Amino acid sequence: MNLINFNNLNMYQIFIIVCAAIFIFVYLTDFNAKYLRKSDRRLEFFTDVIQQEAYVCKTNNDIFDKHYMDLYNIIYYDNDINNYLFDKLNETIYENKNKNKNKNKNKNKNKNKNKNINFLIIWPNSDNFIKQINKYNYSSELLSDNFTINKKIVTQNNYLINHFKNLCTCDVSNYNILTLFTFDIQSFTHIILNNFNIYKFSFKEQIKLLNNIEQWCKNNGYFIIYLLDEVVFESNDKNPLFNLKNATHRDTGNIQHDKLNINTTFRYGDKTANYKNISVKEELEINYDNEEDEFSKKRRAYEYCLNITPMKILVSKIVSLNFDIIEKYPLSAVDPYYSGHYLYIFKKNNTNSSYNEF
Image 1: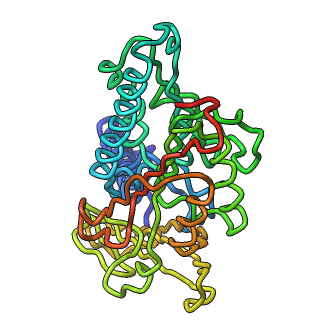
Image 2: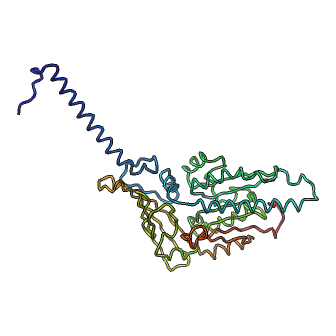
Image 3: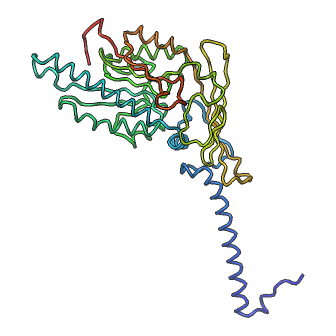
């Protein structure tokens, strides 16, 4: 094999060879970059997070990172439920406003000055809800001037603190809600525990949290909670937890949306027990142009536990804590897919005292 002797080449030939070498270098570099970018796009078409690892697994409250929140915002649909919830909040506020107005018609006009509406929102999961609760400031325009709305948001982890603070002006923190003295007694007019998050606490913690909520809620205040009928886990034709409104296909274990494939599995400690321990695993796989290459094997998994106390037992416990059932709203009215999902609205009665009423 004869090697090129540069000593025998003229300047024009050397120029051609150098240009060819540069072209080959640029081409290979660009090809490699495009190839890598193509793998990144598997995770970038719904988030700007780039996953370098072949497999990432997050557990319990750590699942709430930017990747998961971006996924939640395009897949999980909760706008209709949120709209209903905020309509009900309006009803509760206006009802008490008018009641207090009539009650105090002949009393000192200054008695209701600086009366606050105080929300405690426990473990919200979606950006949509945060944006709506933030805008709820403006729905107070129909209230008298001496009403102000304050909102505290309790998050599951530190990432969500910063994330939600970028979306709202509310007081956001990772408060310890299992400690009674985290908040003052009878300091909230509305306490919201949405997204069936009650079940992410252990059975003992659920009772402890409900006891704390009773102490934090003002007399005539409201407690709103998302509950599941345990029969939703007996269905074999759908994912029992989530209505993936934008999904093209949904069944018990497999959900497809665009190029996303989400496989959800449920492992029961004892499916026949009244109190069910369920391990949930959501595994995300990206299928980009249906290519079978090494990058299509990138996956993320989210694992968390649910402790399903029978709905009747939880409702009975809440009622025993001086709450009256105002409404049991079946979320199947929003979408039949939510059969067995309920939004309960409780009102704390003031049989013991008129102290610190809403």
